[in-house]
Length: 480
Image (cartoon, rainbow, N blue to C red; front, side, top):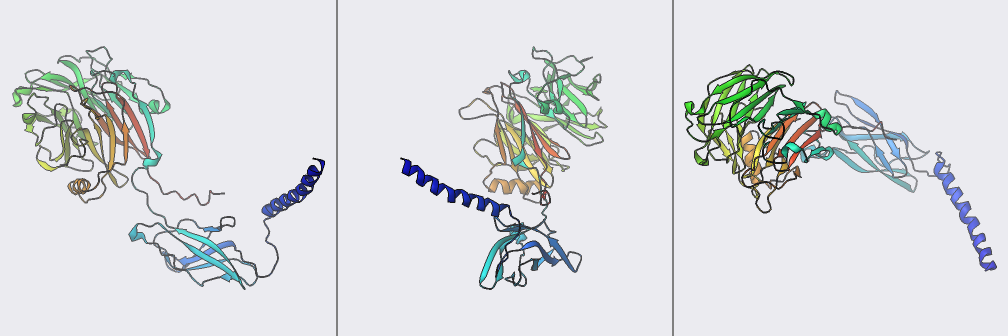
């Protein structure tokens, strides 16, 4: 044993010495002096400038990984004759006078990467050189999505609260007044992002009448709206709050049967699209026993608070008892008619069909409250599926990229012809119910993020998604 230990000690000394030498070499930033050295320091390239003439761009050399990189360049720079310069050992040079780093932008490429070599006598050292372009980033960055989950929210534990909406500041929860779950209220998104709930109860002064005094609602440019639930012969009321702490005013009070509806009820759903001046339309679907004859009341809105007489029309396809008629973002006369018992139909202002989407495993016949939004030059289709309680069906949020297509109709046609893959899906909690399978969805556009709301009754609760605006950040100068 003593002899073995002696040999171990003898072997250990050289290995320790070797380790010390290796560490010393790694930490030494100087290059040894010997013939035919091949390395490059303080690298730069000369490229054709966008404004004419030549421009010198300085880069970095990673000697360990044999990588040469540069800051991102304007996509109009001429990269067909790139000249490399740098601090080289005596006698060394790049293997070519110029290199072609042209980027295949037509094919979707954003960079060009190839080997450049330093030659000196019989020696050669290769580096991978990468030249990247500044390419605009479009849409929202789904990979950086943040989720704020309120699936256990008590007002959605049963079926009494059936409607949600959202803007960039608040979530609106339209809890029916005449039940035990609470009252219509707002939740600040900043609070939800911080992880707590602080309901802002809406003033109820003067609210009365209807099967439920408040049943559905909407947010528009800071204004708050709610509608009661009433039969065809009842009195339909729409209320308006100018701000969260305002006293409501009645802006609409009519009897639906006076305008052609003799059956069904109104107020189960409310769709609204107003411009920044408060001009646009409200759509109220008829929850009728015979869905094929069910239609909408269209109410014109002027200046947020002036509402005209309703106009009745029959939709081209039935969406079931809970239906929405949502304006396509950046469109004038294009709406998505959706309901969890029928297909998504792109329609005109008064129900005329433009295009009916094909089915996709029941997703598009269970779609509720579908919206199309354009954000940062990308077009998205979003929806929440209504859960009728059938086997294998669920409440879920879906977001699809439908940017391709010069028009909304062409975009939906191309989407139908493709594989219909989603950008994002989130399954909600809850078991659904065969009698109440409504659901809510909303987009809200902010400068730095696209917000999404999805929710449903019977324990699904709601979820707010924050999707950052996609950016093409070049951290070249921040890298160590």
